Amino acid sequence: MLVLITEYLSQFINGLSVFQYITLRAIFAAMTSLVISLIFGPRIIMWLNSMQLKQAIRDDGPETHLKKHGTPTMGGALIILAVCLSSLLWADLSNRYVWIILFTVVGFGLIGWIDDYKKVVEKNPNGISAKHKIFWQSILAIFIAFTLYYTASTPEETELLLPFVKDFALPLGWFYIVFVYFVVVGSSNAVNLTDGLDGLAILPTVMIAGALGIFAYVTGNFQFSEYLNIPFISGAGEVAIVAAAICGAGLGFLWFNTYPAMVFMGDIGALSLGASLGIMAVVVRQEFVLAIMGGVFVIETLSVIIQVVSFKLTGKRVFRMAPIHHHFELKGWPEPRVIVRFWIITIVLVLIGLATLKIR
Image (cartoon, rainbow, N blue to C red):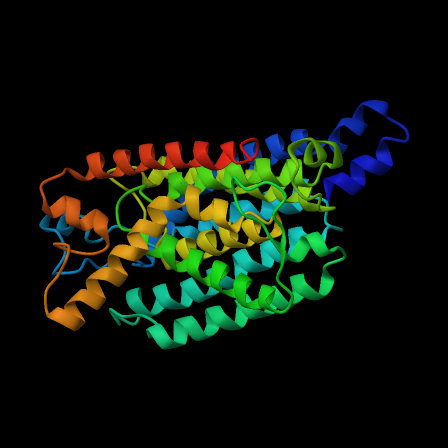
């Protein structure tokens, strides 16, 4: 919104033309969402407490988690609010990618809100059934994939790229829709599975969103994309604004979510953030890089799959508890140690992901 206003006013005030630069607007988007989170965070936590929207703790989980009982949940609404308001202020609202990502954030957030509501208010420990959750996630993901496919204006927008491989671009055709579906739904559920410890999921999300913002900026800039030998995608640069808003909102939320957490994001936040990472990776054609940078999310998801398959086939468990962060807790690791070590792993993986821009 401010892009259009400053563009008009720059005819009379020369200095306002600086607001056309993506880098400056990304900085302001991050700062705006951070301030929104910090200002409204305490108010939302108080409201969640007053409405008795508090987390129920599994009896079969680590004993150290029992003290978390009664901590307010559904705090992910704060993140969605900050991301949407900041993006609407600083992004170019004529850009289709901005609206597609915001639709993803709100749509998956709504699914998460219903799931949290059933768990917390209706006292249904399972929330939405797995089949219903996947069904509604699939409806949204397929709609988003169709929208991206039919609004693509160049072949590069639907080609598959491989990290560390030069001059590889595989046209996906109709399979692009299937591929996008799995990326978005997979990343959404992967972040949700990881969100089991205080701050464990939110900081990796912030780091990965920041890296995807860098990818978006260079992908949407013809000179940078040509120099780095990556496809130029017109309009992709605006994705950096939403990515920056996610970074700011995530850091603001971490202020209240760090150990010991004052609030949990709930499915409303985890599903929304995971899907947003997936769709941003799709826009900049870096889905495999997302898998590298989100290695912690991938490992958490694989640990659940391995645990379930092993128990069904052999009756034995591979891990003491899944997802794998609970396994380390049951081995005696204090919760902060698990969290920080997973953060360190993510930092390394994000740096490896960024290295793919030059190593080809």
